Length: 285
Image (tube, rainbow, N blue to C red; front, side, top):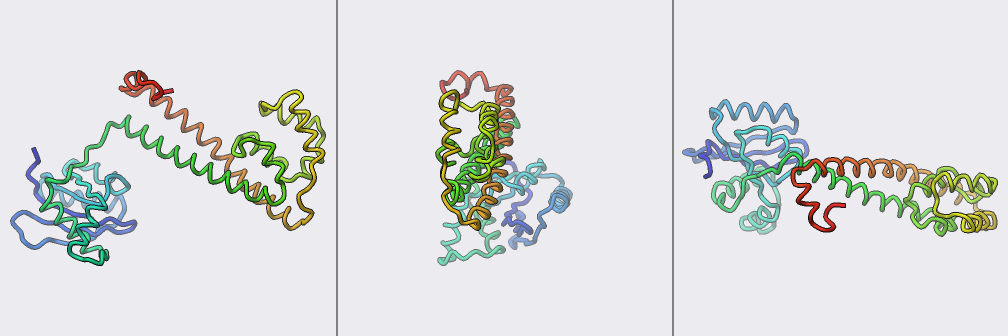
């Protein structure tokens, strides 16, 4: 059963300041206002609403189901959040403004109209358990880091093609720890060729390289016999700095991603539904 709302509020959110429109049952003219995006401002606004309406439930609609403002508002039990899908609002806006032009006050009034006239089509926000949402957020952020790693690896590839293309053949994965360590130590072909074969061998073995025995001997020989792709010092000097920069960024990601993996694994094993999820083949490693 839906509670009897003391007021209906729609918020058109933004990064710095939100515009809100409020309809109070029995009053025909909606009230308008703005709200700064800060925990202190939101807290004062929520407290003022609680005092004004005696702590009664208030429906709040906005074009978000998650995000900074939603996370702030869910702290207050008297505020019931109704997410409005962006496509729903966009189509509703076109019904009155064929151009689809967006205006913050008008947008807030349209969201309020959807909340007041079509609330039966909306669903109040129901958050999952803390355990589930924590794992969800960790997995989502991990995915962003993995995507960033792919992007950085591609950015590392481009300058290597300019002056050190042999390195692309020496590592099957440029985003691997051993490749990153190699470029941080030897960003140019001349740098690695100045090193002794014993030093190069020690490097590979210390990083648990799968290139062992005869294969490692062959790799060292390839390094020693490699021919510089260019003698243009401007190319080598500038692009080797880029390689060092991208390798440094990749190094940070190679630390961060396993850290996420450990946290996710630990929380997953403590989750109440872990045994159930583990029973499905391939779901839990």
